[in-house]
Length: 525
Image 1: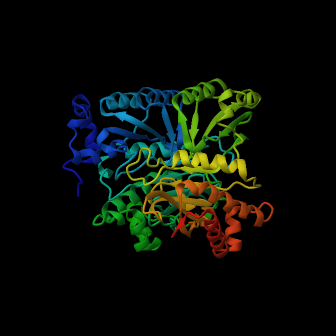
Image 2: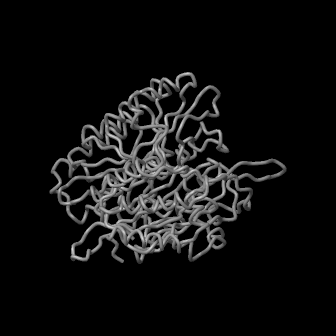
Image 3: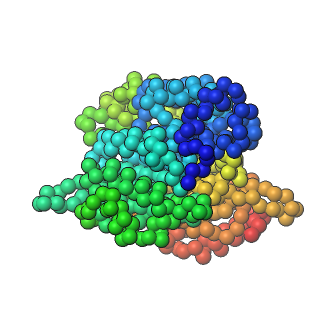
């Protein structure tokens, strides 16, 4: 069943006409079709400005690509350059008249926005350290590139029931957040014919939004040369058997929940042939996608440097400067992380200290403070039509306030989202902050937040739990300050927030939050 009179990707053919005749020439019923080109109308839709997401497979950008993206941001996007939780780059304020030139620039740089949004295969998340990682089984960047290019502009897979998110990584610390992807290839080993082989296990059916699911592992061992066929097979199953009747039940996670791993494996082996059974999981503890500091690469004499980008937002001139620095000190690459941060790789060890003296690294630092360094935010009401509240700047202000008020011996991961769709991935946060609208005692509607605690993707993952109450946005900094002060006063030395929640349980935390709300005086249940 097609959603429009034509395939979603056909919008690429229509855009030159709309660009020539202006925004008013686009029929309202066609606005949603722009998602297949990576374009959303930002708030308010009638003003005719677009957000655009650009795919960055594995998060790897060349110097030329970084320069091209910075130029688009500067020339057409009011200088805003956001790194997303899927390693993509997002622009704002784009006008239809400029889209053809933007597409031309992207194509010339080897980039694309096709499938960055819409009911189609999305940007493929990978290991941002692919090829340089001392803790990867092997370099997955070529695999990601091959499979990404197979699905690009592929009309056999451009009308899926809903969006389809994939990750491929052999980083031993689950840098690609396997459990929240529709399908994830994760590092594994197995003895086959007396020889140890490296490859993947496959997790299927993860996803967030209002009804989150953790992906389940299939009883299969996938060799590198089988990944493409496996990815095609699973995507085909989703296309042909995924639920289409009700959009809110159309993600692969619901099909997987109904079928279970055994039935799903049986079906996809019809596409791949009989596969080896599961081997040994090679994963270690989850690093949440953070790579701060200077680290030795697998290549002798070279290091990569991991930087914090506060809530993922840069401006175009900063990106130009980062590109210059990456070329001067490295090989020109910049790598984006799903924690909304970045890495500059391939820096000769003897040049690292000089690189770190560059003025830009006073803001974009290798040693961020505990809260701003571990804060994630979606786009929020500033640009997104789905959001209920402002998030991006609010999260930055709150994190910086907490860094000035609460000193901790461990980081606390704060994720803020503006709606239940959870682009900011609040379910996996230590403290998740979900925006809602709330009626105050004097009958005014205000922006507010619910608080969730104790999320992780360690050991298969656990989503965080909701505490009762809604807090006005204006009082949220004070509430979090007191809540985290309670954590500081009752935690053990070196104890993480997640371990603290598991040790004390939700009831004492709820009691403390209730007491805080009484003191702050702004809680409405």
